[in-house]
Length: 565
Image 1 (cartoon, rainbow, N blue to C red):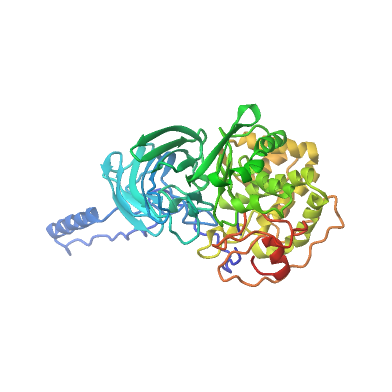
Image 2: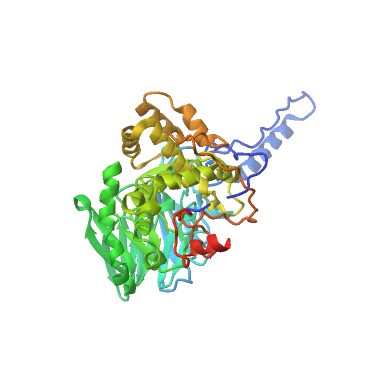
């Protein structure tokens, strides 16, 4: 994804999650009555007044945030979302707010007199819970709803919010304005800048999308098509997911698009979405997807979702993104003739592998994101080595990463204990240590387990946690079970150590002394070779500095000048 640099000196991990009801207020002191000092009638009157005042006070707001170490205020407690039904009405102008309705089905997990959703970049017109109007108020990037009646644990909820969704943002995620419409990029937590939701990757749910747009435009979203309806000059497209999905992986594309349909392994529906005018140029790249799916299935098992495809956006994003069943790519990746084919294909495989690692198996907390990027980087490197030339050597790339690893850890923290993001730069957790620095952990683990044991672990991991969430402790436990011995000590050094442990099988590999890095003043650092977008967001996939690149490529320019291309 992208990359942060500074952390408060005390190393605070942020507040822990609180229960759904707020018990944080200090308890009132109890005073013993002294006989004869206060007449009983006056005391009774005082109690009645106090009870009346207490009844008039609004109930306490449920704690905002689930207590994620990196993002303490992200997500919401007190309920679990089971499904979203999101309707968007697009005017044909990508600089105007969309009219929207979001319907959320959920189940209460605690006693609630209020509940909160993550939401920003839109105006709320009305809200209701279980058919009754609910009072709504904004608290930062949380939408706080007060239901007409108390909510009890286990109660099923239907929340309906009528709102707008503004595509003109600050370049920090959510809507992407393309040359002919819109797309979405919600990592790490920007889905709530498009629609109200419980915006944490551990809160997965089923999705239905209804996108209404002028005829002549094509709308596509996650999942499979579930019908179209035309009314006058406008058409509504419906899509539905067959598997639960994290909000950060939601995708809606609207534009003058062509949808290319083909079949992958065992009849898997593959649909690619491209700007209609660029279909001839992009066709040769898109034809590679079925073979790439087959390659990944040979490594880790059957594709985990109902469909897959490539969404090519005509926009200067500077990154690629693993949105579920429909990965987002910048058009420029496919149209730069200077890039070797094996490199472009390895980027495609990086995003494809995320469908298993990060999408089907989502991180329990954002500190577990190394599991996503380590594996995607691993299969990107493995594919490049199999399909590329001598420049694509995995060992060469891993040796270079090992040399840099101590510096990466000093800058961003160890793989499973990343430093806090810079203020206002939540995606700045995506530093080099999360990519090649975390792939080093897998490189060492494969040597520890042996190739057969490592391959068994990979298949078992995605099968055991399919459609679920899992964290670092789960990975350590499964690896230990397959190895036959407790690997906690091994993982502790590799995942939490300030220094990089010796690499098994490579006693000659030596880490370089960390170099001091200059503060970026709240801007995200960039993965070596990443193509920066207009928002300063780094590329999802790093171009390895040991892979020679044409001088005109942005990464090569940056290596030569030290400045962003």
